[in-house]
Image 1 (cartoon, rainbow, N blue to C red):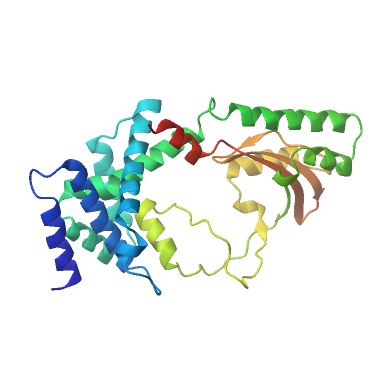
Image 2: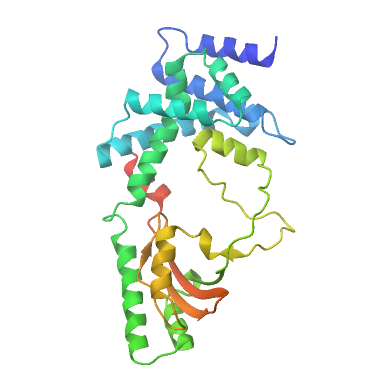
Length: 293
C-alpha cells in the first residue's frame, strides 16, 4: 500500500466517530507532521525518533496554550470566518500544491479537520504575536531604558561631546547590545533571487509567505552590502531627517522585536554609518510560559 493511502487509513482509524477530541487532534497533527517530514531532504532518522510521541503532544499542548492566551489576555477568539480566510490564503499562495494535496488527503479531505490542524495554529500564532509585539504595557520597561539612553545622548551632545564620547556613553551598561552598521545609500542592484531551500519552503507553507527562516548564513557565503533603500519606508524617512551628521541621535525606534536608538558616525553621498543600541523586548516564549497553567 502506498504511503499516502496508508496514512489516510491510519488517520481515519484514529479519528473514528466518538473518539476523544484531544486524541483526534493529536492524531491529525501526527499525520500532518509525518507528511512534512517525508518531504524533508537529506539523511534523517525514522519519523518516530525525530518526533517522538511526548514531543508531538507538547506541540499540540503549546498550540492550545497559545489559543487560550489569545482569548484570556487579548479577548480574541478564533472564528470560522478567520479559518476560512486562512484556508483560502493557503490554497491560493501555496508553492507546493502536491504537498498541500497530501495534507488534505491524510486528513480525509475534511475541510474542518484541515482548518483545525493546519490553518488554526497559523492564525493563532500570527494574531498572538501581533498583539504581544505591540503590547505597550508588556514592553514598557524596555522602552524606558531606551528612552533614558536616548536622553543621555542628547544631553551629552548638547554639551559638546563628539561621536567617540557619545559612543562610549551608548555602550555604558549596554556593551553587548551595541553594534555598528553601514548602509549603502545608492540604488540596490538587481539580483537574481536565490533558490528557496527546502527548510524555507516548509516554513512558508506552514506559517505564510512572509515568514522568515532565521539562521546563520551558510559557510563561505559572501558578505552582502546593506542598502538603506531596503529599510521600511517610514524608518528611512525618520533616519534621513534625524541622522545628517556625526553625533546625531535618533528618537527611539520601535520594531516588533526591539527598541533601537541610532547614533550617526558618518554620512557621505554614498554611505551612512551608524552605531545602534538594540534593546530586546520581553521574550515571547517566556511570557507565553507565564500564561500557561
